[in-house]
Image (cartoon, rainbow, N blue to C red):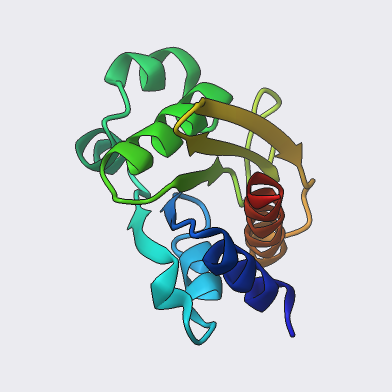
Length: 155
């Protein structure tokens, strides 16, 4: 059984449903979950909010947060996760926003990805520095880290 299948099984056993809010991964986390047969029992919906406008319109991310911190920030990741939770019927929401590359800056380098987790008790965020490992590898690493964060939230 794959780790993702184990995640779906665990969520089902705990009666928990999941939603995603993705930017740099473009739906890869949602796809990984829904690749598992039976995931419809635990997966509510996924938001792909690649643009800032989509983050504001679909998730309620505040424009002031985007202006002050930028899309790749723990503050935006927190608001994305909270917005996904509020706009879904899920118990746990995860968000992913980052710089997959190529490119980046000294302040926000390629491979920086921020993650948010929201549940009824509130939301938290973390940042991972995957490094300049290439766009595809950053996106895959972000997907896998997101799955690990969901596992942690369920256990």
